[in-house]
Length: 278
Ligand SMILES: [Zn+2]
Image (cartoon, rainbow, N blue to C red; front, side, top):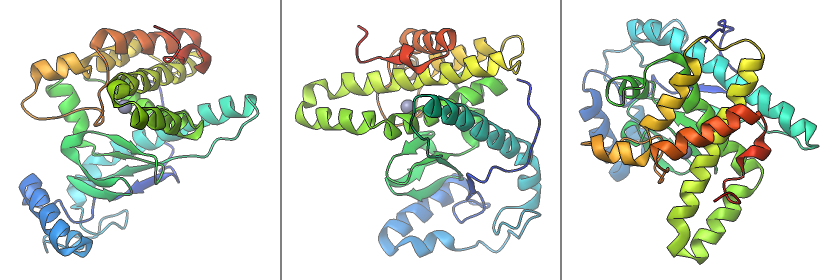
């Protein structure tokens, strides 16, 4: 993908340096989480004494880690702004207005308005605080464990999560949740349709990126591959853990790739009515 670093997005919230991390790693994170559940969140802010303030002014993130991850943070910032500008334009043309979501980068675990987020859950969107939560370590999992490497695979993940924000802004997500409460028998099916629509929305953004000459050979395939790799069927076949793009049922590999493609070809969210189709 063609892009140039433009600094940090003002919609990026960097929590990587807060608690949870350090030499104890994931085990320490889980322990901190349990302690936090018992004793309250102030436990999460305890420093392990080995970390320091880095060049970006964050307490608790080792400078070496911070420097190593900075290119990725810049890429996330770029994606966040680019995807949201695309939706801002689309909302504007439809006579609406877009309210930007925040992207929270964290390690191991963090608090959200939807409960404690853990890395093992994979990236997720919380409509209550309108934030996407992401542990950069997920991309390593996506590459090694799910066989979906590449910058555009990562772009797909961010675009998918922001797709859930769009569903929240249009009011669709809340309407669907209402239907799910009143008819639990179809709750799962409705979740799948929401997920496929978020894939389609990721495709809509990919179309816009392509139009602006940002895609390189193989990028769309990377996105498609990522969409398929995190399909329910593949995940169930592969996992020992419960890694997922977020915590809902998502649809099969074929379905996910199909809807990403629909959005990509059309370049318009009207192609993404997963509730009418099928
Ligand atoms: Zn999702």
